[in-house]
Amino acid sequence: MKSTIIWESDRLVAISKAPGVSLATSRAGGADAVQRLLNSLAEKERLSLWAEEGGPHLVHRLDVGTSGLVVLARDREAHVAVVRALSERLVEKVYLALVWGKPKPREGLWMWPLGPDRTDRRRMQAAPDGKPSQSRFVTLATHPHVSLLELHPETGRTHQLRVHCLQAGHLIVGDDLYGGAKERGVRDEALRRHLQPGRPLLHAWCLHLPDTLAGPEVILCAPIPADFAQVLKFLRIVPPEAPSAVTTSKGMTPRPR
Image (cartoon, rainbow, N blue to C red; front, side, top):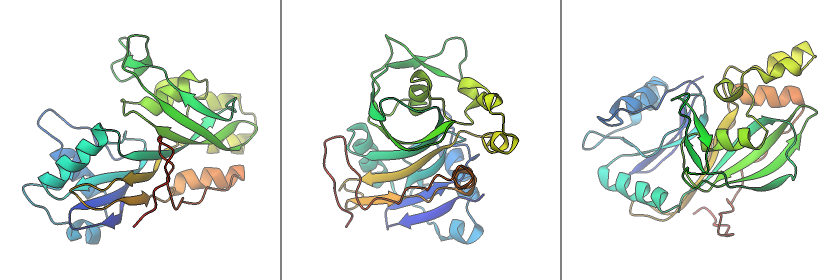
């Protein structure tokens, strides 16, 4: 799968990242991550991006196995503006995840603090002395073995959604780092194959950017990638339609301009 540009302005670019593209950054900065992301685009799209001051600049990251929306800033002023909005929790993010089991209740708020897992540096864990973390969840559809969830991270901790799903007893399908091959309990061979996707079925679906110096308010949505969509089709789960508004944690429903 290739990454694709889904929206751009004179100062920002939104890319739907393909699963498998690493956005890991070093202390030297995010230039390598940006280059990997650009390399995952088709050549025509990659050449259409222009940069100022060594940009474009990575605004936020996704885990290597997670697909979906990533925002790049074309210049440093736009980068600072969007990063500030993120730090002030003014940017609303919505994810889709296929998880094991059926959450009860069907919607609610997870509030486990998170900290490093000292037994495995790759992982995070729920920890009483960790950083405050909040994720809202809504069950969109269920299957005898799995459920499709809409997830709203209200904080931005590393692996937050993955660990909150695990802590709730509903590991994300394909997330071997946090739980191993749970599909072994599925007897149907075809179903078992589909529930071995080779990566966590977690998709950064929608993003609401507020009005900032980088540009006016906008709501963006990235199509569900082919591998995720194929699993949903096999399960006979109808994918949700992209919303015309994203409900924020403050209860507002801003409309795109």
